[in-house]
Image (cartoon, rainbow, N blue to C red; front, side):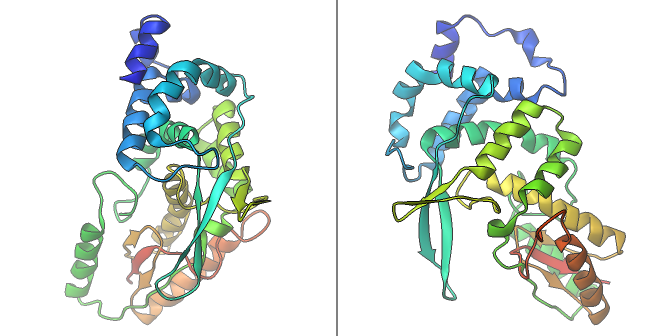
Length: 286
């Protein structure tokens, strides 16, 4: 494996370093074992190349020659993610959805971040959140919704926050991350990924909002943000099921309460964090 050969090139891995301080997340992200897992996952996912044209099957040779340089630049804060390649695809119901394809190298780095942060945050997510989580799936969400229906809650309202991934407020998201992740180097790297421009039809577009669909980190960041909505629904005593980004409250009272919770979640520190629709399978029941 590429990570094993790198370890041999640069000395044995210090096993004691696995007992890292909880705050030093970036060291865990950059660990060789984490790199190896990330490379394997990116290869399994395959996917198109980014703006540099590098294919997944070129990863091994490139990282053998360049990983130490990349790792050092990440560690000292000088690493700059490449721009994202924008690709528009047709939506089933009309309109276009903008996908952002990072370079293969940035996919590896984002996957490394995801692998470290996912277990940290997954324990904080509610048991009724089923999207983009290990051991959770859409079938489980459907079964939970059916349980609610069989318990006598028959009125269903389908809600969807529009263009959620396009309007995520970066400052609000970063403030949520900072509550748990105090490693400022890692937080700066995540912000760089949020801010990296997108190339569409040969033109660069700056990005002040949103986290593009198509990157390994976006689903986790979306769930971290949507967990704030889940907590607000819990406060209001609503039964619910959420999968990624669609909503289904039941009963008139629940719909009114959910509407209030959604409006509250829109009020970020500057621009609204959520717009009108969201793409979260959510059953709210009162």
